[in-house]
Length: 108
Length: 130
Image (cartoon, rainbow over all chains, first blue to last red; front, side, top):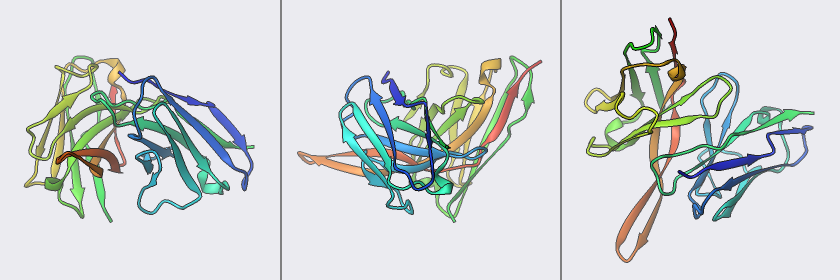
């Protein structure tokens, strides 16, 4: 089973600041990694697939990078609606599919 | 608007059974593989099960293998999850998600499809307690 470790657990930032979230895989997943955003009471929402491709309708302030075991989600300038929990998920050598533990981006 | 709507969640005693449904709107379930994912309060999402478009391939997480069964009725545009022998640790919000092959690679004439969960339902709550 591939274990995904996200850091930091919590990121305290102000609107307009840049957010950098990390996801590390226990073994290489090539670029087969997705990022999801989840707000309280809502389902996860696909932001990024294949490590760097934005899903339909996702603003370009969201970008993903990385390959192998180390991945980054960057939000270039935080908007009020971006404060949420972010999860990474791999799509390599499954089942099982696994999610990271999440990074909560909170208002400072 | 593409939509998935889960139903069937309830309060059930340990050892009991439930069947969850997931109805698709504005797209044909026939064209997509599907997954079930659950999320216990304050925890990360946990993938449970995958079913291919024609039901010929099914996968389960170890935590539910032998207790949960995924099925689909393409004509009715509905996905199901039959849950038996329920335990307290099965308490969670249950989501269905569309598996969309957003990435397709071709190596030496072999096509490989990489699926990502691009449409999710709003979830249905299952509580297992006496």
